[in-house]
Structure formats: C-alpha cells, structure tokens
Image (cartoon, rainbow, N blue to C red):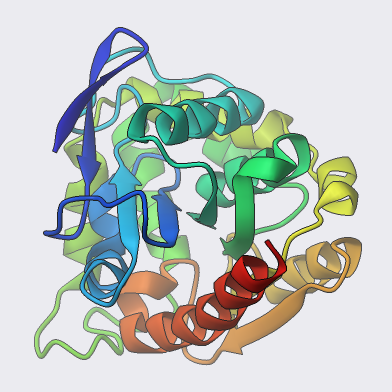
Length: 271
C-alpha cells in the first residue's frame, strides 16, 4: 500500500492483508541499502496469522519517495510517525542491521510506543571499516559486492529452503535497484551511532537474534548488546551470516514466532 507520510509518498508492505490497528502490530525495519522485500517470508506469515504487519521502505529507498534519513534517531522518529499515521498506539519492532539500531533507539526514546523488540544482526556499535568507507564513497558497486560477500555464511546456494535460490544474486540485485547514494548515507548513519545508552533504557521484552557466522555484526557483539538490555533473550542461528532472513528464513521465523507470541501476549495482559 502507499500512504502519504511527511509530505512524501511512502510504500508499506502489509503482507497481503489490510492493516487492522485492533490487532497486535509488528513493524519490520530493513537495513542499509535494502527494502521491505528482505522480510518476505516473515512479514507475510505474521500478516496471515493474526497480526497487523507494516514493512515500510524507508524514505528514499525503493518505492518510497523523499530524502534518505541521515541518522539512526531520525529513522526511529520516522517509525513513530508511521505508527501515528496508521493509528497504531504501540507495536513490536523487528529490525535488521541498521533497522535494528533504529528499533533500539525507538524503544529507548519512545517506550510507550514499543511493545517488544527483536534485533537481528545487531550491535551497540556498527563501525564501518576504512576499506568499505572508501569504496562506498568512490565506487558504490564495489562496496555492494563487498557487503554481499560478507553478508553470507555459505556458498552460492546456501541453506535457503527454496531449491535453487540464488541468494548472492538476489541480494546484490536488491542493493543495485536502490539509489547508489543511499549506501553511503545508510552506512554513515550506522557508523555514527552508539547504542549503548539506548540499550540500557529499553524496558520492553527483547530478543537479540544472531547468525553464528555473521561477519558484519559478529555474535560476540550481539551477546554484548544483549547484556546491556535488561532481561534480553538471545538466539543464535547456525549456518547463518548477516543475511540470516535469506539464508535461514524458517529458523528466523520460528525464533520470531516463539518470542513475539509470548512478548505481545504478556504485554497485553499487563495493559
């Protein structure tokens, strides 16, 4: 669906169901140089199993107009504006990589709006290496190839349950269809953000989901982030790297199903 948000046309994938604010809501937030499609399996499942699902393309990404947001706090504030626009009082936020930082920041600074938090491929700090920073500024296609290589744990076909799924090619094409200038914008936002203080302020149920072979945000960094968040749970997915939603889609879905069913139910009872 398309909506007007902040004066710009914004695309929001809803999993094939009209969003119903009366249902428990989940917002899926994509990472750098990505879009809503990285959540294809997970978002569609929840939309067809009793949840109100929103998986937006962030401003300036894929089918959403406007200028890309240049900081993690700006993305967090935009997510809250999306909830306002859709008439949703509170939602679970599920974020990957850059999207996980935005979800973390929203939970810290807008606690009444965030019911639960799932952080995939996350870390309190996401520094960008000098080699990648140079490539993203001088040769974006090369930077995309570097990210694509580092994001996957296995070979060209990997462990996706769809026979013949070419994860390397699919992810590279996804990045290529976005504006090349978005890459430097998004990675700079990650590089500049320090989520340590925000993590300590999180008061909602939280899951930190890690790929055992993640080279972008190693499991060690995910565990350190979880230790900063009161009561956070952790799940590590074997044979998965940073692109865990593509490499191990069913296992990511299972982890989210188990966590969100408990987290949202307990919050509803408490309310």
